[in-house]
Length: 485
Ligand SMILES: Cc1cc2nc3c(=O)[nH]c(=O)nc-3n(C[C@H](O)[C@H](O)[C@H](O)COP(=O)(O)OP(=O)(O)OC[C@H]3O[C@@H](n4cnc5c(N)ncnc54)[C@H](O)[C@@H]3O)c2cc1C
Image (cartoon, rainbow, N blue to C red):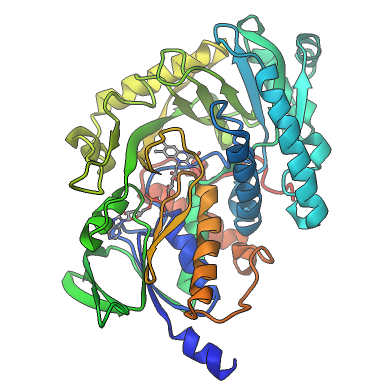
């Protein structure tokens, strides 16, 4: 290390919030030699709202622009390279119900654009091929093909696109659907494994001091605007930490820190929940399934996410399952923090009425059974996965956002999807280099996966500990298809 980089290496960066955003930024900055302090008020990292879809192409969202879908594709590929051991390599079936106004053709042109973008990314760097060959990015199935597949035995471990369609072909009510059906290489991302990987990697990092169970109560600029004082409750005592750069990665509470800094950007926050069901312990051969629908209506989109041993997570974008009346709120001019009604803040703090959990889970099961009749014997499989999600600005449909810089010494990471965490971290690294706070030419991104220095046993054991600590079945830490790349 030369003298110049030694000086840079002393740059102290305080990150408030240890969700996927803050944890990924901490990993990137500590790799680049910054002296990182990561503050998380909960007992463990990546313990906020859930995530289960990687969103490689944004195919769940008909309403967003092609450009947002392309960004999600690129960001998801980098994320899948960084966190390869948190990815579940199983495809997604996209189906348009008969009662929906749309048609499969509405998204096929966009899928072709995404396929071409994916091919270009592979041409640039062969290691970008994390979603299988570009030619197989999506496949269309007409009704006759599905009926033929229904007569084949269901494979225990599907590998080809056709094999992934068989369980669905045998069980779905095809009379409810428009054709063709689409199978797309949209994969899953496992929140418990992400939490395990980021925790283990940061605990091993010599450049990061990790403060869990530590709530930041105030921040203030001092020394002629060149340093920040962060006050936090650490081990039962108020302590002050001085840093050269401050990063706000507080998720849906980002506005609380903006208020302390005296900034008032507009944003929204939405409370949502997904439900855990258990079908039958032998159902290990299902892909993700998306039944499109108009958000907020009783026919809102239904999403069935498979886990090992018959566990399935369900989202239904209807007011009585995933969405909640008054669950979407915007900031007002007096505060940058949107105020969620108290009943949602109570839920964020795990105070759910068991009856509501049961009712909503059963309604979620009913929604799926409307398309897959045999699913009607699924039962409650665990507590809901819920949280409040931040959306910067005033467009509630925004799905791609990363970081904003409000001064030379303050960055705000505000992501809507987990795959935007890495681009946010990279932009912050570039900014700190440009400001002379980090050395030029640090470690390039995308060359290694975070988990290359970890063993599978370490990751899976930690993921199980976290799932049990958070009261979820340990099966949710498993992947259906771990070893594809
Ligand atoms: C139901 C639901 C399903 C979702 N599904 C997906 C999905 O499938 N795929 C996907 O990509 N995204 C999904 N999301 C969105 C995803 O969960 C978020 O984008 C992501 O969690 C945001 O990460 P974050 O790090 O910005 O925020 P968070 O995960 O909220 O992390 C912020 C952290 O800051 C901490 N914090 C706040 N204030 C303080 C303080 N003062 N001091 C110390 N710590 C503090 C909090 O405890 C928290 O851990 C879903 C969201 C919901 C609600």
